[in-house]
Amino acid sequence: MTGFGEASRQVGSAHYFVEVRSLNSKYFKAMIRLPEDLQPLEAELENLLRHKLSRGSVFLTAKHSDTSGGAAHTINQAALANYVQQLSSIAGSGKVNLDLGALVALPGVLQPPADEEKRLAEARAVLNDITARACEGVLAMRLREGEIVRADLLANRDVIADRLRLVTQRAPMVMAEYEKRLKSRIAAMIAELGVTVEAVDVVREIGIAAERADTSEEISRLTAHIDHFTQLLSGPDPRPVGRTLDFLTQEMLREANTIASKCQDAEISRWTVEIKGAIDRIKEQVQNVE
Image (cartoon, rainbow, N blue to C red):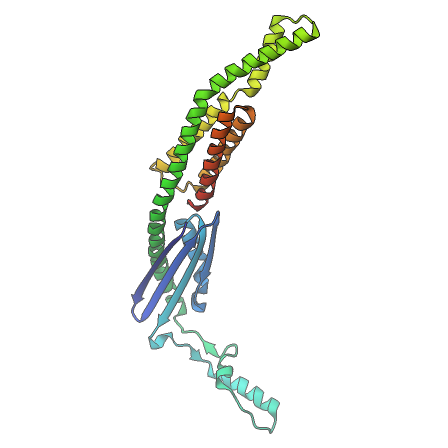
C-alpha cells in the first residue's frame, strides 16, 4: 500500500530529517539513502522499517546538517606535507601548481572529528526515533487507503456470496434433472442393445456418474473460504493479512473453477463466471493489502 511520512528533530546544532515513502509490492524491499557519515546505520534502519512496515517497496531518505565548528574535519598537516613533498620531487626543478581542493581529497588528509563515535551514537538514537515517527505517518496514510480497499473487497465478497447462494439453491434441482436424464439414457441404451442388466448395476453406475457431477463439497469449501475472508477483514488481530488473503483467493478460484467444470447448467455457469470475475478483482486488490 502507498504511504508517506516525514519527521525531523533538532539536537543542539545538529538537524536531522527523515522521509519515508512506500509503494505497493508483494514483498518487503527497502531502499535507504543516507549521508556518508551515517552509512553505518543503514542495516539498523532497514531492520526498523521491516518491523514497522512488513510489506511494500519502502524508500527512506535521511538528511543531516551540523552548524557547529566541532563538526568540521581536521587537516592532517603531516600527511598533506608528505603529499606536497612527493609531488615536488616528481616535478624536479619545474614549477608545481598545486590544487588545494584536490590535495585535501587525498586519502588521509582529512580526519573526522575526534568524537565521531559519540556523534554516531547520538545520530543512531535520533534517527531511530524520527524514523519510527515517519513510519507512523506512513501507517496512518495506509490506514485511510486500507478502509477504501476494504470496502471494495467486501463489495466483491458480497457478489461472490450472492451468486454462490443462487448456485446452492439451484444445484439440487440440476442434480435431480441430471440423474433423470442419465437414467433415461441408460434405459434407452439397454433397450437398444437388447441386453438385461441388473438394477443394482444401473443404480451403481448412476451413482458414480452423479458423484462426479456433484458440487456440494466445492460449494461448502467456497462458503468456508468466504467466511474466513470476512473474518480476516473484520477481525481485531492487527497482524498483516495480505499474503493470507492472496492465498485464500487462490483457493476460492480453484473451487469456483471446479464448480464450473462439474456443472453444465447454463444458469450456474453464468453465476460461476460472475463469481470468478469477482475473485479476480479481489486477487488484484489484495496485492495492495499489508
